Length: 57
View 1 (cartoon, helix red, strand yellow):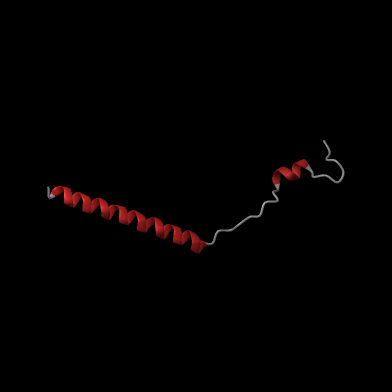
View 2 (cartoon, rainbow, N blue to C red):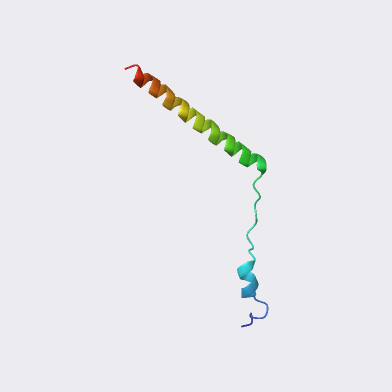
C-alpha cells in the first residue's frame, strides 16, 4: 500500500519518531546513586538506633 503523495509514509513513521531524544548526563545518574546510598545508610542507622534502644528496655 502506498502513502498519499506528500503525506507521511506509514512504514517509516512507525520506525522513526519526531520526539526529541534527551540524554541524561552521567553526573545526574551519579548524583541520584549517591542520594540513594545516603538515604539507605540513614535508614539503616535509624533502625540500628531503634534496635539499640529496644534492647535497653
